[in-house]
Amino acid sequence: MNKFFRHISIFTLVLIMGCSKKSPAVNIYDSEEYKSLDRKDLIVGESIWSTACFRCHMYGTNGAVLLDDKAYWDKAASKGIDELYKSVWEGKKGENGQMPAKGFCNLCSEDEIRKSIFYIFDLGKRVQASNEKKDLKRES
Image 1 (cartoon, helix red, strand yellow):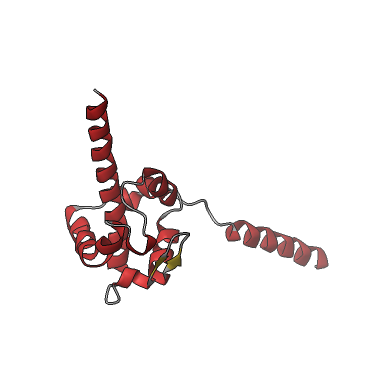
Image 2: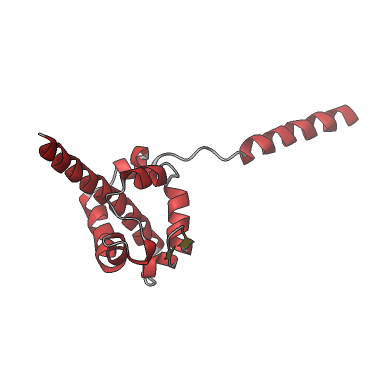
């Protein structure tokens, strides 16, 4: 009987340890949630962007990272939506400034904040692609 409990204890310990490992974050651009966004989701995100996020991320106010900083946004995307969401929801102190909790959108729901994150990454990709095209035109 004692052997039985020892085996059960070992099995339980292995099971708990295996389940407690955090799976690696999925790059936001590769996530199913990002890929399945529809127009309605992006409109919700855009409405939050235009009332809260725009002020800082369009002009670099309060040390915010601009949309055209591809290296920054690619690195941030690799953190995955859960970590990004937590940073936005709780606020974050960065190297050059601070993002307030919910990016000053105090009345925003969790879903709206999440959609605004997807929108800003989508918008960032479009801004960066546009800048690359302009750079190519200048070079030719």
